[in-house]
Structures are given as structure tokens and as C-alpha cells.
Length: 532
Image (cartoon, rainbow, N blue to C red; front, side, top):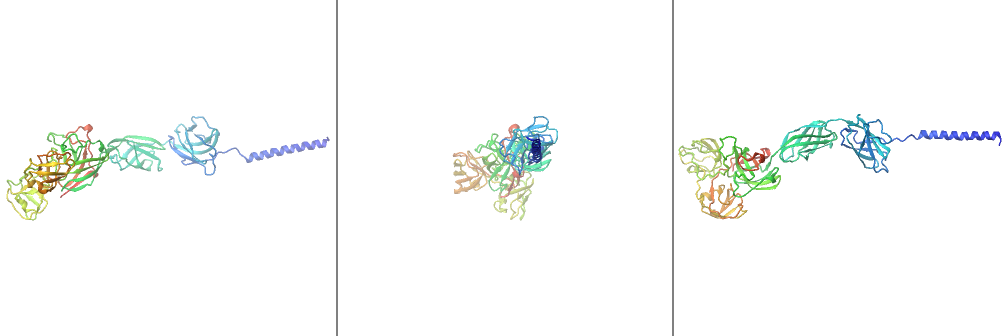
């Protein structure tokens, strides 16, 4: 081979090598090292306490295609390492990662307080390969609960409360909370220092609140007091007869209820539904209150108590008879004579009667009929409607005539046959048949109190038929029988005015404090009695 050809060959080989190197260099410049997709996070930050869940998404890169179990971690480095790091002060693994699609995954953060800086990276891996990342910022927000406004409410729940504290998220749906272990509803963030919610129903007592959010959990013990409030429907009725009422409250299934004849207003063993003026008080605090009496006892009570559920009961409220301070039903067996030694002043066209003997007619006699000779000066059915003073009363109608004769004005009927009435009772029935030995004064007195063996305490006469041989009463008799001691008495009706319906765990005087409970007066428990 000639020298000239050999030289040419060497030159050609060198050209090929140079061209290949240049091509490789160009290719190297056109294909850079792998760069992971930069993901969009549903929340760019959260509390370093962790516990919050976010999503990571790419709208253009299927970064999870072919991957079933991605892993994740958070680092306080400026970039995610190509392979997973080691747990420590710069690296925290995320234990809860879920693939949602080829483009999207969710993570629930652990506590990140060990990573010193606020700016962090959320890094995703497929095994040891970095597949995506996103910027995440943590804040060391201290969440706390300091109070609830108002600080208490009815056991029925349903009221709006404001929870006050610090560090609350302001994003809708970012807060959950429980009150006494039951979930608050309608939670609405107001600011980082408060949110509103609807209180759930709960048994009476002092309960804690627990608030959970992306900023952590916080508890306030003894945060809210549930009170034993009730709501009664209807909330008004005339005092011309009994009325059925529906009572909404709490813990009714725990009540020991009895509707037997032996159950009087003062019976210690049973729960009661009382009509009271003001706050019912069975505790004697002074010797001035006679033993067995209550400082503020019931005016009347419910019969036929039927507990429907733990939050509802129905009963029949007596309004044509009244309970005295000793817990027994008031009966006027003889008529009152307030002008025995005085001359009652009755003026034509006036509804006021004055000049009475002092102190005989009292508030408990409101509702009793006007009787005696002077009753002819008033329309039939006229009754005492108000006590103006110790010597004057107001009646339900104006006088059609005038008089000042002493001794001819009485209040209440004089009933006879009070111990010898007989009849036949049927269990569960309001009707008494075969009634005998009642005088006309008894049988015509619809609204009179009726007593006798087998008759529920406080029952009143609501109807008369067969010339007095058949009587309808306000409360069904619990047992069958043939009593021979039926008696009827005029009884003062419940005076008109505003009262409270009160549910008590026992009707006893001086009940044991540790086991006793009663509902509280509220707008829902107010019951108004009107004239009949």
C-alpha cells in the first residue's frame, strides 16, 4: 500500500470520529437530565401539627401512570432529592398516600414540627425514583378554645353558639367539633378567633368541647352547661276544663311515672308534671314554712302522663281544680261567707264587690262561683275573677242589681251527699255509671272535684247525664270497682295568668338533692291560663 493511500485512510477515520463526537455532544445538549413534574397542591400550606389532607395534581402530565403505590415525604431542603432521604431533622415520611388517578394523589400529613424551616417540599416517589414535587409551607399556629357564647342552653339543643379561641382555619369545612361527645352542626368559620355552630341535644349537665382542624385539636373542659328546658304545646287554654298538652324535653324515659288513683300531688315515689307560678321549689329553708308544705308548690298538675320517647311526653293538665300548699287538691265542702258580719256592697253595673270580711276570700278561691241570695243579682255562672284587696273582689260579670244586706253573699257551693255516692268504674274509662246518692248540687256542678275509691287524684266532673246517674270525669279510672264513697266538691279553678309547666323527677317535699331533677322555666315552658 502506498504512503499516500494510508495517509488518506487515517484522515477519513479521524473525520468519522470527530463527527460522532460532535453528534453526541449535540444530543447531550438536546436531552437534559430528568426533571420531575411540578405539582399543584390543593392547599399550599398547613399547620406543622399535621393531620390535614391535601391533593397533588398535574393537569398535563400523567405522573402516576403505571404506578400503583406511590410514596411521599416532606423535606425542608430547597429541592427534592432524586432518591428518598433518611428520617431526621430534614426528612419526614408521609405514611398516608393514595393514588386517585394517573394525574392526582392525596396525602395526609404527619406532624412536621421537627423540620425547622417553614418552606418545605412535598416529594413523591415510585420506589427510589422521584416522580413529582410541590412547594408546601407550614405554620406553627396554636389552636385553642377559650369560651362558648352563650355558656349554656336547653337540653333540647338547636340553639346557635359561638366558639371563641385562637388559630381556627377560616375555610368552610375545615373545622369539626363535638360538644359533650356529640357533633356540632352548621359549623361556619367567622375568623381565626371564632366560629358559629348549632348545639346538639344532650342530657342536662356541664360538658366539654373538642375542636379538630388542620391546625390541630383543642379541648375546653366544663365549656357548656345544658339545662333541663322543655317546650309545651299548646301553651294557653281557658280554665273551663282540662287540656291535653305535648311536652318536648330530654330524659323522659328515666322518669318513674304512675297514673294510679293513689298518686297525689305530694307522692314521693313518682315523677310529676306540675303547673307552677314562678320557679317550683320543694325545699323548706325556714321553719316559717309548715312541715310538709312547699315554699313554692304546684297550682295544678298533669294526669295521664304518657311518655312517648326520651324527648316527648303527653299528659292532661287540670285547670278546673287546684292544689293547695300541702300538696292536696283544694275542695270547698262548704260555701264561704265573707259578709257574715259585714254587708257586701254590690253596685248595679259594677263587677266589684266590696265591704267583705277581711281575709276570707283569697287568691286560691279565684274561679269559685258566686252563690247565696246575692247570686240573683248577677248573670248565671258568675265567678270570682280576681282578689283586689282583703275586703274586695272582682267577679266575671257586672251586677244587674244592687244590695248591701249582710249575710246574703257567699262564694262556693254547699255540697251534700259527700260521703255516700255509689257508682261503677270500668278500668281505662272516663265514665262512671250507676251513680246514686248525689244531690242536684253535686251532679250539676260540671267542673267540680270528684273523690272516692278508685278515682284519680284531682279528677273533675266534665259531664252529667241520665239525671245524674252517669258522670264523665276528666281522667280515666285505672282500675274497675264499685265505690260507695264518691263525693263532689266545688274546687277553685286555676286563676288566669302566666305559669310554668315543670317536669320534676319526684313530687316529694325535700327530695334528695343528689338524685332530684326538675326542668327550668323558659319561654318554651310558659303556659297561660285564660278565663272560662
